[in-house]
Structures are given as C-alpha cells and as structure tokens.
Length: 626
Image 1 (tube, helix red, strand yellow):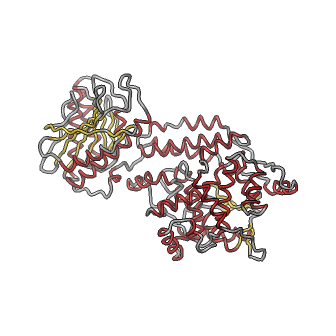
Image 2 (image 1 turned 180 degrees about the horizontal axis):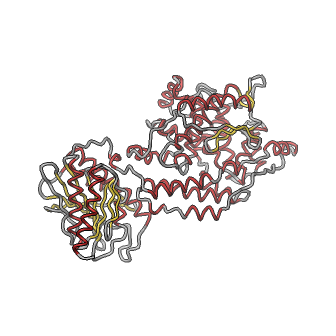
Image 3 (image 1 turned 60 degrees about the horizontal axis):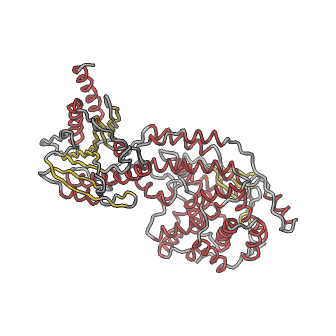
C-alpha cells in the first residue's frame, strides 16, 4: 500500500471512530499496523501509550488495559501524523461535552543500577495544574512493589512527551481546554536484563496504577470540567468485553457441573446411625455416597482452557482467577473423596480452626447449658414445613417475577439444603415450630435469595459464588435467624460443636473419639453428636462446618465497624471481595438487587440490627434466646 492509500485508510479509520464517539457509543477498534483504541463512553480523559520503535517494552501496554478510555499506538515516526490526527479528533469530540479534556501519556524509564526506582511526572511549565499534581503525587506515593514504596519526581516542560518521541497535540480552543500530562513509570514488573515479565508484580502494579489514574481523573473532572462523578470508581469501565462474558459463561458452566455438598453428603445417614448405635458407639459408621458423574482431568482441561489472561479489567481478572483456582481445588476434592487427601484439600478450601475461634466455641459450650428438647413442643414434619416454605417462596415471587426457586422433599438427604437456588428438604426433617421462621430466613431468605440476586447480575459468578464465599454466606444465614427472632442457645451450641468437631478432626481424632468429645464433654445428645461428627467426617474429613461460626464472628466485626448489611446480599460473595463489589457498583457494572429478605422489613429485625451494631458480640445474639 502506497502513502496515498495509507492516508485514505487512516482517514477512513478516524471517520469510523468519530461517528460512535459523537453518538456517545462504545468504541473498540484495532489500529492499522499496531495498537488499539478503547473508549467506554463519553469521558473527559484519554490514557495513551506509544510503543517505542527502537526497543522492546514488554508488559507496559497492559498497564492501561483496565482503563475506560485508552489508546495504544505505534511510536514509529511515520505513524506520528496519523496518531496525532486521531488524538486531536478524540479530544475535540469528547472534550466538547465537558469543556476540558486531559491526555495522560505513560512510558517506561529504566533506573540505573543502585538507583531507587521513581515515578517521573512531567507537567506543563505554564498554567501548571497544582491541585491535580498534588493528587497524582500523593496517590503515586501509595504504590508499593514488594512492600517498598516508590519515590516521585516532578519535572516541567512546555509539552510533555516520552523520551525520543514528539509531543501529542493537545489542541485548545474556545470550547475545549486541553491538559497534557506525562508519567514515566519504573518497569519493576520485568527483569531489567532479559525483559522476562513477573506476572504477579505486573498484576498488582496494574491494579495500583489504575487506582492512581482514576483518582487523578476524578480531581481533573471536578477542577476543570463540568463532569461531577461522586466517586473515582465511577470513572472506571462500564462495558464488559466479549472475553469477559465468554469466560464468565465457561466458569459458570463448570461450576454447575457438580454440587460439592451433594457429592460429599452420605445417602445412608439413618442406616449409619442405627449401625453406630447398635455397635454401642464403639465402631465408626460406614457412609455411602452418590456416584460421581464427572471426569476430573477433562474438567480441568476445560477450566484452564478459559482465556482469563485476556481479561483486561483487573478487578474482574482477580475475581475470575480466584474462582478458577477454587474450582480446581473443588474438582480435586471430589476426586479425592474417601481418601486422606480429601481432608487436606478441604482445609485448603475452607481453612483451619485457629485458636481464637476455638476459644470462642469452647466459651459458648461452657456458658450455654445443654438444652433438651421438649417432647410436648409442636414440631413440623417435612410435609408441613414444605407447605410453609412454599408460602415463603410465593411471597418472594410476588416481589420479583423471575424468582424461580423450586422446592423438593427428598429421601436421599438429611436436613435442609439449598442447591442452585432450590430448597431441598430431607424426608425425615422435623422442625420445631419456634424455629420455622429462623429456618426459612436461613435457607430461603439468605441462601435462595442471594442465589437469585446473583443471577440478576450481568456476570454469573455472583450466583455461582465468588471464591471463599461460604463463610460470609453462612454468617449471614445465622444472622438472619437472629433477626427473625429464632436464634437460641441450642443453635449456638450446635455451631460451637461443629467448630470443636473440626478441631478434633484436624488434631488427629477419629470419628468415635470426636463423638465422645461432643457427647461426654460437649453436652450433646448421642444423636446430635453423631450428626455433628457425620458432617465433619463425611467424604474423608470435611472442614466446611467451621465456617458457620467463623463467618458469623467476621460479620459481627464488619457490622461493628459500620459496615452495611444489604450490599452483602447482592449475591454470593466473600467479605474480602467487598471492596471489589463496591467498585463494580460505582462503575455500574452491577445492578441493584431485585430481592430484599422479608425479615429485614420487620421493625423487630431493624431494632435487633441496631442493637447488634452497638454491641457486636456473640452474647448480644443470645440476649433474647438463652
């Protein structure tokens, strides 16, 4: 193609970009030759990276991929005029809506040996934006690499530009004021000699720099433009690229391919109890399980065939990568069922019982006397409880027409269980009448509601469950029992007993020894001690039951620190992911939850929640129920 044809092609490309920009539409184009333009929507800034023509620069382009408005372009001299024309067109169109526009160009600057790496800010020498530079400098000082804070230097030039490259045009006219800033970054994410990337450092550096840039754009918006974002996260990406959607669907499909609770729950609990009792509690029971209709190797090939490395959004990349790692471990766990490896895999997923949690469990058992069931108290059998649950589900369906939860009474499970948003009721279930509201708040108002709230979101991981979501999910479910007025000392003793059982398992005790600890020292009846031990020893050693009390304690700490409750019901999330969820909410990636638990609408629940915020302790939970 000759020079004249190049010019025609370049002009056609700029025209193809101008139209959607003027219509405030999403623009995502590959540039002729090399590069990419991504503009999420109408925004008063553009991040730019020009690839050096004379040297390799691995990793640097990825620093901008998470931004809502960026341009990657070739730095060859023959491409300058065209790149400048494209930038000028973007500035004029985008800036017209805000009265001002900011170009921020980044490049790398290698440090000499023994020199401390620094961020090098280059600002215009005239009309210096002092407040903006202060925000940028303070934000950069918060960036750390391997726990070492970096320094910041500021230089002033009439037209900032990377070393060896001409400045980009920053046209100013009566309608648009244009500000050009440069930022040289130390490439600590690669080996200085070989250029080999350090992926973990690069990912963290990218996340930290992304926050710096958004805070800078936030200050620029409020100081120079008519745009008034409420939070700097609002300036992040709204739209999800196709690879995000494809990866989300693929991860969700693998997650739906198995139900870990069903695969590790015995199908012969009643028979096992009978045999254990007949053996005078001296011989461990034998548990039988469902067949495992999955092939671990094939599932893992599918799992690691998902191209998560192509996800540009660093927040979603973190969420999806953590979920892939957890699915990998869960698949291994199911494959290891019945072996000692199962126990170690369970610890990797659900954690261990630390000393503070163990002490809290022991204190609960000491402070709460054993409670013996009143044989005269009314009890609902499976059919009666199912009728109450159906009415509860219908109430939620009136609140949200797409609420599709089903209810099923089954012979092959014990107790109550929620699987993929459906309530499963064991045929032998007996629920005390005084516990019905609490049980419904736990199973339907928490587990079913968060499953359907998660399904309302634009990506499915909030429904399948983010990595490590179980602790918060179970903590919320137990809290819901308190807010519904049905959390009593018997229930709290049960949660404490589960922690004791997990500790016994981890300490090397067998089933019989754990049963005796619960029965003789914990004050549990023989059948209750058997059920607690069964849940913990199923599959080969299942430590999940410690998360109920751990999740509750962590949730109380969250509420005591002023944390809100309802954002936690947006889907199945972990407390550690809350900052990421809040960011996605500010970015309008996530939608408001369509379902709100019924118990939260009652005045008694509001009063209990207020009391708990003032005194966030396990004892506060028991003030009404002991």
